Length: 234
Image 1 (cartoon, rainbow, N blue to C red):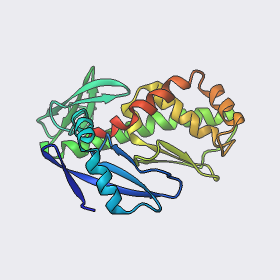
Image 2 (cartoon, rainbow, N blue to C red):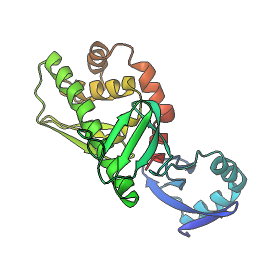
Image 3 (tube, rainbow, N blue to C red):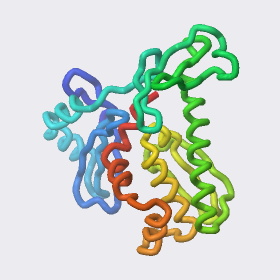
């Protein structure tokens, strides 16, 4: 199986995954990376997978054409912050105005000072700090409500999950949640905090989520439909 396939006018990477539970071959286009993801049942051969991709060539062309473009962190980029679109602007001086630091937000603009080559890293670091503040304050408030301790809070950038909770009280979250609306941040943090009580998705678990974050189904649906788009940025 080639590592890439010509779809339309571009070379598109192919990611092959085998699944013991899959009964049929499935094909999708990853919204964040643009990769073609092929899931094969255990008994299916790679040659069968290649033929399946060739049969779906026209469909793949349509899917890739509809993908939203990636947004690099650069001067003039439109980037969401807590669900509100902001324009990134490079500030030519080495430092920002007194007391503001190298990155600061002003109305609907995020200013990044210093060398333009350092803008992507500085903006990413700033977003991660904002994410930690937003997530930590919510997590400790929710944990206090359910009278459970939090051992530590970690940030990650995994595509597979927005948050996780270990048996010993370590909570992990995607820093990209800070790009989503505050109701989405609330829901994911409430979800993981509820796991401090119930390490499952039972009726009791969802009752805790509902108590911590009433009306959680709306942000839950948004995340399911649009969450992957947050990986387009940076």
